[in-house]
Amino acid sequence: MLNQMKTYQMYIGGQWVLASDNQTRKITDPANGNLIGVVPEATVMEVNEAVAAARNAFDNTNWGSADNALNRAQLMMALANKLRENAAKFAELDTLNCGKPLVESEGDVADSANCLDFFAGLATKTMGETVAVPMNMQSMVVREPIGVVAQIVPWNYPLLMGVWKIAPALAAGCTIVMKPSELTPLSILELAKLTEEVGIPAGVVNIITGIGEVAGAALVNHPDIDKIAFTGGTDTGMKVMTAAAKGIKNVTLELGGKNPVVVFADANLDKSAEWIAFAGMANQGQVCSAGSRILVEKSVYNEVIERVAKIVTHIKLGHGLDEGVRMGPVISKEQQDKVMSYIEKAKAEKCRLICGGSLPKGEQFAKGNFIEPTIFADVEPHHTLFKEEVFGPVMSFTSFDTEDEAVKLANDTEYGLAAGVFTESVTKAHRVVKQIRAGIIWVNNYHPTFNELPWGGYKKSGIGRELGKYGIEAYLETKQININLDEGQLGWY
Ligand code: NAD
Image (cartoon, rainbow, N blue to C red):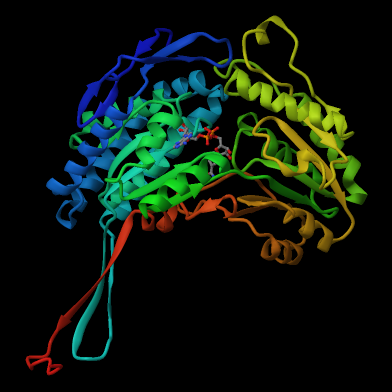
């Protein structure tokens, strides 16, 4: 058990540094408010230093060269193994920092190590092509690392979201300046220590800690950044994209969602109910792909609500490190207030409260940001709960009569990240999957995702894809080369 508060430094150009004005931020455990760490609050000066270090490592070393691809792969696999050796420490740290149950953090750490291995495999497989063209030319397309990348990640998966970005960038041969969320920077700083231990050269991975409006904004607006990779809220994504537009920078965005889960009457309800509860309540509902809008065929509507509510009301709430806990606190007091304001709004809009809807009572919850897992029924498309991402343990239920209506309701959102479909009919499942505009769709399950498959959204859920072979694409440039095989003159003038 990590019980000693630690003071952290940022990692810039292979050095561990404080903020130039010595400003710091206290990091607390959202389950009880205990101080768990102190990190520097970066100023624009440290952002500039980090970008300069990354620029130097990219421009003046062989880090990104094809000659170095095997070395990059080996370093990444060494990093994956180091992470596995320290898995218990990392899992505990993410639970302490962001509140999620330990079993979830353990899964995140294992996924992170596997993600590094997956992309290590791709580091040596960057391939271009030759293309048959006229004019006696030998033409080819080669892929090269995009350069210095700015990576900004949120607080809901502190380690995993960071690794989803670091791994493909390292494999491609890019150099990195990453800014974790100001609320959850600890596991990424610990990961930076491991990059140093395994010998990833100075300047290749740089970590700055600070707030979005200062460090994040300075990073995305920096002229020496070649690409921005951002995961976070849609409003922040718009600001990031505006900065990218001003600098004509390549940008990928992983943003929010208001994800539908369509449950047909022919679904196996014995198996489906738990998946549906998991869709909405995993990680306290603080998941971009959370299945928060449950759309149920009318004939089984009340039965599905009853079954899911029964599961949800028995979820064990508590500190994520405690035995058997499956729901921790939300990340901050601010987030707790925001979620509770959605609950109050749903009550005011006359949605039918099925369970939860309050802060849990009891001494053990008094100092943490806990919220009762909450379900509302009879939520209509005009209700706020149907439209807006809550990012908390709140699920809404809506009924439908026909398959067409189900698809219409599912697509009635500005987002398009994920969706679920529950049915025993394979033809119906395929028909519905084809029509839902979302980047990830689960049938008769919800949430499992794999390093081998692309992750990302349609519509306002983002631009581009992470993971899979698509993930490395985001970090590669494409160069056309034409070699003249003709010995003659051009003869133009
Ligand atoms: P957020 O947008 O508030 O912050 C995300 C990151 O952006 C943080 O590191 C923050 O410091 C930084 N930031 C804030 N303002 C900035 C600015 N002006 N310029 C540059 N950086 C800035 O999001 P959050 O509250 O940390 O995370 C929750 C959101 O993330 C949710 O909307 C969720 O859906 C989304 N999310 C999406 C995915 C996905 O894969 N699509 C995954 C996880 C989370």
